[in-house]
Length: 322
Image (tube, rainbow, N blue to C red; front, side):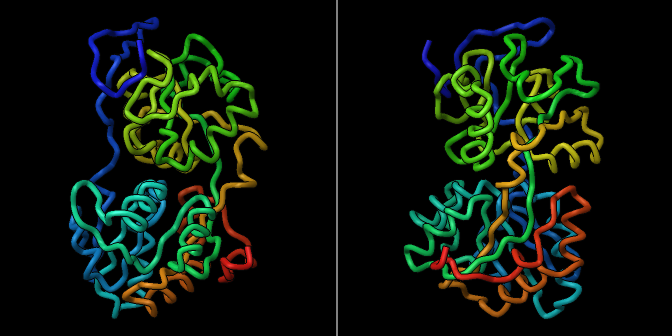
C-alpha cells in the first residue's frame, strides 16, 4: 500500500495502542497562529487582515508560540505608542514559500507579503530573501534543542533517540516538507544515528504515514504531536525541548526524554530574525530588534526553556557577508 494522505480504512493495533491509518490534524494550536496584540492587553485571534494594518507585523517560527503573550505584553509596555502588533507563528518554511515568495496567501486568505520582521530556525531562509533583495540584515536572538516527547511516566521506557529504531514504537514527527525542525535537524539526527530510512521510509510528505502504522508525519505543525501522544495514537515524537517544558507546564499528560549532544543539534539550532526591505513599519521593527537583545526579552525566552544568544549574536549583521 502506498503512503498517502488520503483516508484508508484499516487500523493498526500495537499492544494497547490503536492507531488509525489516517488521523486528523491534532491540536495544532491554530487559534494561536494568528494573533493581534493590543496595547490595552487585548488579544484577537485569526484576524489575518491585520497583517496589512498593524503597527508592527511579524512572521515568526511557530515553535515560539508560547512565548508571544509575555513577550509582546512586555514590549508594548515599553513602547506604548505601538498600539497593535500582529504576529504569525507557523512553520517558517511555509511562510517563506506561500507568503513571502509566492502568492501571499495562507489558509485561502490574502496576507501581506511585506511583514516588518521575519524569523526562522534556519538562516538560509533569510539568505534566500537577501538574494531577492527582500532582506539585508539579521541577528540571532535565541537557541533551542531537540528532545523526545513521550507519554506521561514513559510507559514504553524510551531511553534516548536510538530507541526510535525499535519496532514496537509508533512515532509522530514533524513533516519534512514545511517544518524546519525535521527538515533541517530531526532528519539529520536520524541520519547520524543510521535510522533515517527505517523511521521515515524515505518518504517526504505531510498528513501521512511515512511508514504505514509506524511513523506519522504531521499535517502542519509539531504541536500536533502532544495530542497524538495523549490520545494513544503515538508513543514518541521529535519536538523542541521548549515544547516538552510548555506541555508539562500546561498539565499535559506527556514527559520528555533528553537527547544528548551532538544529536540534539543545540550547537546548530539558531533563531534568526531580520527586517524586510519592503516593511511598512521600519522604525518599529528596529525597536523590536533592540528589545529582543535586552535582558528582559532574553529572560522571557529563558523562562520557557529557550537557550540564550550570545552578546555577539545579538548584534545586527549583514546577510550579504555570510
